[in-house]
Image (cartoon, rainbow, N blue to C red; front, side, top):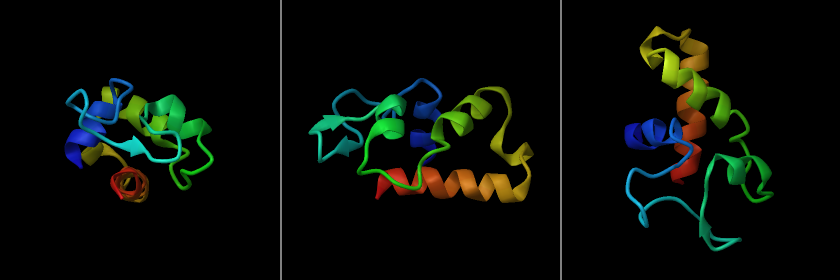
Length: 79
C-alpha cells in the first residue's frame, strides 16, 4: 500500500506500468482523474488531496485522524 500512496503523488496508482489497479467497469488502469469521476469507486474522493499533501509533508507529520482517513482511502483502492 505504501507504493500505491507514493505512486499517487505522480498521478498514478501503480509504480509499474501494466501492473496496478484496474477499473473493471471501464477496463483500464485508473489515474487520479478516473478515481474522481468513476461512479464505481466510492470512498476515495480525497485521494488527490492526500497525494498532493504527501508530496510536501511526510504522512507521520499529519494529524492522526487525517492520517488514518488517508490510509483508509488508499486501502480502498487496493480492494
